[in-house]
Image (tube, rainbow over all chains, first blue to last red; front, side, top):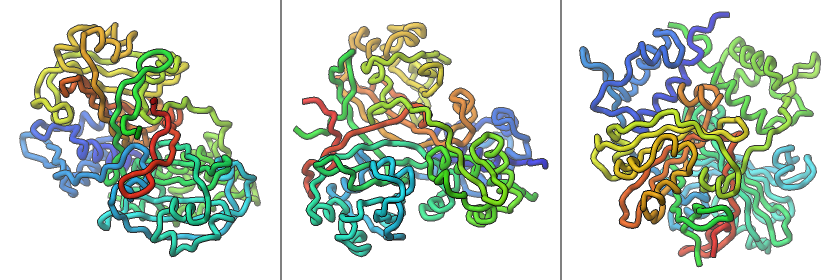
Length: 254
Length: 254
């Protein structure tokens, strides 16, 4: 079967990001349709569809005889979080967010979460899905797995109003620390719909395992963030590593 | 014009990521083609094409009468960097990487880099593009802008063999610190080709401005990373913020 436009949406997403990133000088013409079609190895018809959509959305302006110009919208500054990327820290920063608990259940831990938590796959745990917004703009979609005995001490309503760390504290759990990975992932249909982005959009992803003082996993969270609404920032200073100069985060407390 | 399969490649990328992430239990059938087609609002023909490609690539297995099963490949563990995400730190960790300097020139700073560096757009600066590999696997594509007077003190060959921080030091520059943003971006045709990923794949993106002791910008880097080869990790501990408990990186030095 012929597939005339397999790349159409992906090229749209890439060019849209580049326009929002101001990668194209607004005073200079963008590469021509012929050049872009060649670069992405697609037909001019495909490329034209992409450009028509960008034009419809006001992201480019075609000027007869002059060329096509990028029109980056006046930027809406994203909320800036430190690079730990933790919504909990937003709370500590005094910023209030709105939370919707979309799912709340006790169910079998799937293999990936079980492996992260060091429990057998199928172990019953509390699964919750939360959507978080700041000034009515949804910016994070988070799925949490919490050890059953701790999860049973609070309700879905508690989860919507009280930070999870506070709920753990109220349950008598002493948190020792956490291990976190920062990744990039593409939006699937569920997340794209809830966060208001296109399927396939690049999202920041954080996976974190929180442990108690005995080293047992209390919580495993996987959260996806709209990078244009919620930005991770970090100040770095130079220190000494074993083999030379080493960057390190500078907002550590004494 | 009809566009029968606009979502084909995006759905392919999303499902591929989910299989590699082990989001599907390998012992349980995946959602059916009908269910997936409905979820992504595409025709069954479109969805079937996606599944055929995943099958061709050995990522799913169809078993007559039983259903379709995810076959996550035995994982190739990514290199783990701390969350500062700095290749410089890999060097300090004693890991050697291979660098190709793809471009090296003195040219006008474009608006986005100029704004980050606090110089007028059009200011001449050194622009270099480097591709970095670890054990022959390319994992980062980085574009750097360096202040002209500092850039003139070294060559493209120096850049391929010596860490940039060391070159700055040799030029007599005292680095005071850096400010860094962590983002997610989609691979364009240049980066996709060099890093060996599909156009539109989600990549980790780091943008950093390095300043000297007078607060002047020395370097602005924008680097894109393959998240399956190069992973950012961070240990966190709980501290006290102004309004309550606060997560903070725990690898800070005293």
